[in-house]
Length: 161
Image (cartoon, rainbow, N blue to C red; front, side, top):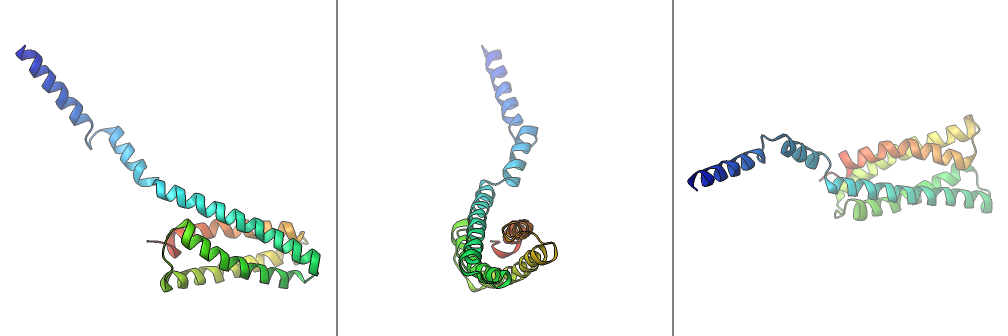
């Protein structure tokens, strides 16, 4: 009976020591939990959903303004990108990152927005006027190129906590 108690205590010690920080599964789980935080995955999903929504809205508005009003593509796209930028700032601040709006965040957002919108604008016009690509396809090309950069800048610079 005494031997059984000693063996039982030794088994408990073995189980306890294997679940501490020196055990590989524990270290792996801890690393994965740190690397892939649920909050980051949720934020990335919200950024992608919002960005896809605004991309679709941008394509639709560019097409409608071109079809209905026949405005030159460079004026059309300038108006649309300005409007979409304002709506995007509100969405990403409140929904994607759930932060209070502040002057510091707004300054960062405006800084990146201006730089990336200028890049987007010139890329769009390059596709339309230099390469002769259809305006709807040009919207997709320029927006996709800038999207990848934008996600990284949002997470690492604009909305960092």
